[in-house]
Image 1 (tube, protein in one colour):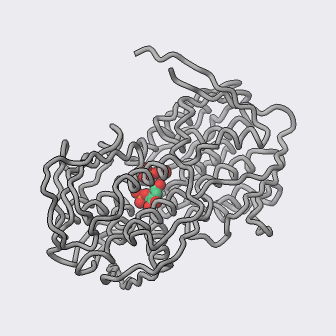
Image 2: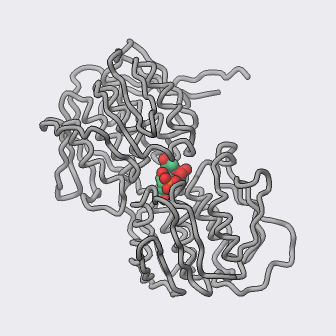
Length: 435
Ligand SMILES: O=C(O)C1=C[C@@H](OP(=O)(O)O)[C@@H](O)[C@H](O)C1
Ligand SMILES: C=C(OP(=O)(O)O)C(=O)O
């Protein structure tokens, strides 16, 4: 049985609401790994209810923190490996690859069928260079991974490609302080998604872990964690869907408590980017408020999204719906996320007459044939962001049916409830799936 959401908005398109967003899954997943590595000296506050965070928390609780992550312990006697299944959680897969390599035990780290298509070879090979015992259980370079820890460190210097996923780098940086020799990472090529590496280093600094970043090298010496609490901010990627709603409404004032204008999350750039679509952000006593009635700023000729890949679907869909023939760069990594997000966007934007085409890594929207049928049905490809980026179109299209509505659970489980709170009608449709 598949469950779809039928989304519509009746009456005046004026939205005035307050939405309490759940904690950032990126911050939470780092905080949980750091807490485990610190043997719970570091506590986490405002844990997200994102499924990816719930999964990682469950795995870490089950594994316990007794074993010796500081390295040097003898290898386990048994050949039975412990199954660790992250489902669709990319950060959990990447962070645990490093964490389990440093931990005493024998593990089979796996995930969904899609996870088995998301590359991990760059990280696994870097860990092997450090001394980790890792092998590919199915396909070379992809999960599942057999990991036998703790690693017997052979070197402190590792080279790593920076242009595929920053998660590999964050994963290594978090275990660096517990490695007997520490770690110096030399990043080769351009670093993609850089704000996520900054987030990792800032969160490590908050619990006393120092680093040096010179040129393309980041070094962390062996160090102990300082006791403390990491307080997680709400999720800025989730906030981006409220910016979309504000951009498509006739008038909107949406307050988002506890969000900070200056955030650890790179996706807080949505504040500046959405000015292109006439949305203004202001600080309030409790967080921020977004308003739709300000004058739009000029769109740049090409908007680069390399530092905020998770905003790409939000921004591309809004630009398309507003008929802006914009061009984008920095979208290369979208093909290896929850789905091939470029192909997914191309397929679904075609339903409102918009094309997205690529020439020399510049992606251009053509909205000349933009039209809004009375009803569109959007496929979501097991990708939460497809559902959430397209649902706001219900402000322009009478009925938007979003397939497999449960996909939102990955990062924003209360998305549909929050839409209802803001005045949308959301009905659940049950369809039998014929195999
Ligand atoms: O480190 C993180 O928390 C994340 C980094 C980004 O991935 P890439 O570095 O693979 O672009 C982002 O897309 C993902 O949702 C979360
Ligand atoms: C890419 C994402 O997540 P992950 O890589 O952690 O699966 C995302 O949340 O958009």
